[in-house]
Length: 151
Image (cartoon, rainbow, N blue to C red; front, side, top):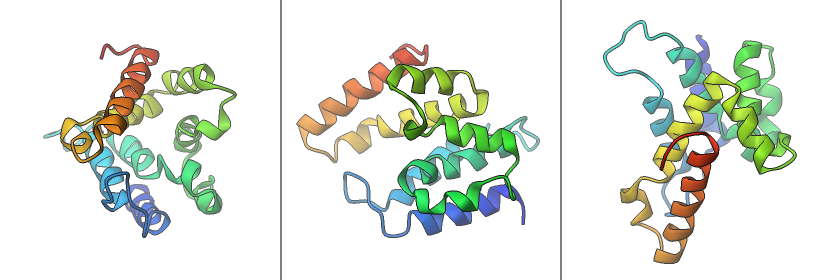
């Protein structure tokens, strides 16, 4: 089994039963992020498999630490393990350190930007209370600035 498929299956197991702030299955968010990191129309997209693999796992390490031993380099190349770790806020000593780690890892940065885009999508935010939606808009605007991307 290839790493993308293995990561996808692990993400489905890890996020089974979880829901997002709007009550939707959480895996839908993960799947959208995984799809977003692939370059449309490129069969041999450079880095797409790595980014898609990390995208499937991007919230497993942080949200489901009981699954971490499934991610470790037994089957996942170390470059991808490092990207998943960079995306884990639990590894950082603060917000600045977290965004610095993400910015310094090309795969993690690609996945985080797709994650932020999905989390700040206005159609998704419209499903939340105005107060929560506004808080999240501000949060993701700060995140984009911290990553060097204009809001």
